[in-house]
Image 1 (cartoon, rainbow, N blue to C red):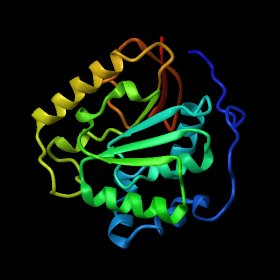
Image 2 (cartoon, rainbow, N blue to C red):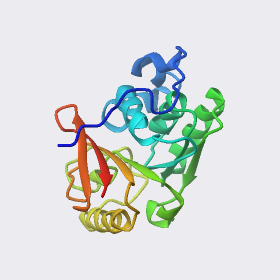
Image 3 (cartoon, helix red, strand yellow):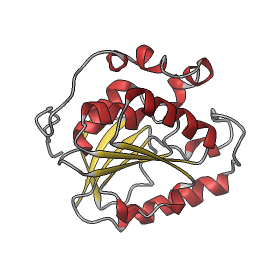
Image 4 (tube, rainbow, N blue to C red):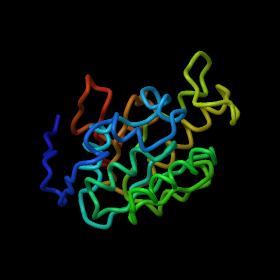
Length: 207
């Protein structure tokens, strides 16, 4: 397996304290109802920071979070890697509301949240991608954020195949970070160059 550097020298980091010190402190930016979902549905702070180190490999790159929830990945990544631009697409308007409110509280200008289904997004507008298996809740017996959207196995496979095709069309050098992914939605042209957290966190580059 190819070795890559995950050191902070890729792009300058901001390391001021406050809500970015721990998950508990960051989650307190949200209402209690949102905090209760954090352990199973929102990206842990250390994962977001490591993913940002890998994805923000150059200044001004555009990074898309597919199924961004309340924006935790984008907001943390934007703090630690402020010279990139972060976009989150989420189909629940309620979660977009909380993401935008937290963005305003943190005064972050390099983050945008888009309300809609990721199949409505032009992947060609973005350089690199973050994916915390937002399709998984379509399967029966899984933890769901709420009941505001439709769930089905058919949707799971539709999203799975759509994502696969979109990734396949990206140019060589495209970077992807997956967390708790089944990995069979990733085309074989992407190669794992590093992994952490007992293989739950993977770093990919398209060849």
